[in-house]
Length: 326
Length: 301
Ligand SMILES: Nc1ncnc2c1ncn2[C@@H]1O[C@H](COP(=O)(O)OP(=O)(O)OP(=O)(O)O)[C@@H](O)[C@H]1O
Ligand SMILES: [Mg+2]
Image 1 (cartoon, rainbow over the protein chains, first blue to last red):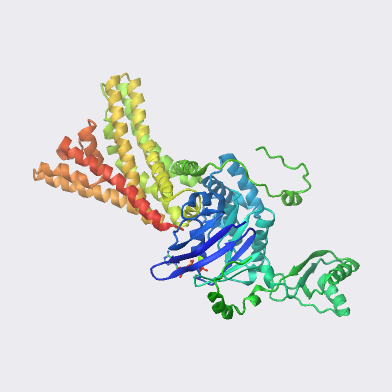
Image 2: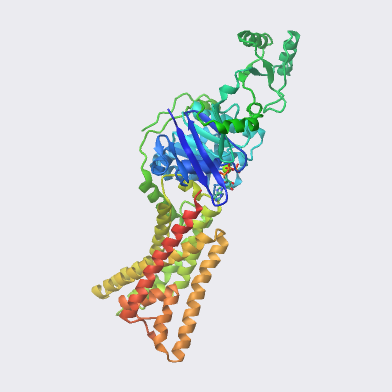
């Protein structure tokens, strides 16, 4: 099943070519659209919403042609813009209810879904206060809520982590992951940071200067090495649980890395997994120490590493008729 | 669509986390419904309903100020058993034009400037509605709000006139003519107010610009009319009235709605001149709509 399909899609402004013969297929799940400033990400989203006609080529969203079925598409998709879009003098509840009705939800359903959606994005008592007093993180959540309130099949999130601190960024990325896993909604999320889409996306599309650079499933890049990330609780016996685990692992001759530079650094241990036995070993060590295992997950290679040589690859990619990853 | 909450109320936190996502499979009422919702939200907003207490004060106050003179006139008419109301239905809005101007100057910017300034407009257009739906809903809402403002005192006058047992058919005819006149006035003023507000996203500037447009055009027209009257070039007076919104309405109702002109020397337009007035009024209304459409096409996302 294809959620988004573009075929030789181009958008030319008088002075710049924002999209240059872009062809791609995006399936269900979370897809990252990565590119530097001015790469054409927002332009692509506007075309996919049926709001800006393409100069050339065609595109379909949920099987609907963007050129002729814009209204139907917009009824089924949600959109979170990259810029501020919230009036400061109304509460999140009032605002999201209004936006739900703009999507066609009857009044009672609009109120009910607003309450649900705001809770799912993590806004509780604050939702009755005027938006003007919210932090950037809370505003991003309201923007996300208005994109989800009508239970779309697909959402376009334009730079949702913009302006967030590392913790806020992590929470937002976690939320984006849940939009697909828990809510069953497909996501197209843009960012100019390759790294942050690593854990979140099933599939990454890289655009540069309006051209498709690469489109592939994130698992494609990750087969070489599996890195295991673990996080444990602290107890009275082991006030620094992470250190305790590290010491035992070192005693058994297993090297660890503290994941410096990554979100949550300091509480996370990274180690190379040699197979099933590494998992068992970690589990047993943690149990012996009487600690709780907060997480044990397989980390992929950092996408930034995978794309380090993107510039070299670009020329070759251009020669092939690129575009159909996944 | 009744939704059962799980009875497990094991603490606020766990309850919050235990409720899973529910899909929505109820009706989606589409574009026309969204347009109606925007209309009613904007109309209510024009009287501060659904907004902060502070935003209710001015429109409500203006509404009262519009109605109080009518109530006093009615009281006088009933008490003195007069033969007719002290003021024509068609004349009432002309008397209170400054109050009406203040209303449109305060409410047109709040209706459209906020959406532009805080960039909410793209969110509307990311939904099924189109530019035309947004423009129509906003235009219709402000015009309706102004109609309520200008028709309510006429209703007070009419009810009072009937209570005072004034001539029924005469009063009904005057009331109907007054309603037609304020309907035109509402469409014209709302259009002008919205166009000016839509190009001045700062609300304060919008308010000032609307007031300036209304008062300067009226001031200029009435001054030049007075000069023309003094120089006894009465032929020019009727044509001069074409250049300000309130004198346009005055001209139309003088020509077609049995009103007496408030131009100097009461020289209103003749019927044939009145046709020009009517065409200009309708042209301005259509023109304002067209300008708004152009403005919002450019906003896009
Ligand atoms: N309406 C427009 N008129 C003219 N040029 C435009 C217009 N919209 C976008 N562009 C140009 O098209 C190119 C792509 O812009 P776009 O906003 O899609 O980039 P982006 O990938 O979203 O960048 P960012 O990360 O900064 O948001 C840019 O060079 C931009 O200047
Ligand atoms: Mg962008």
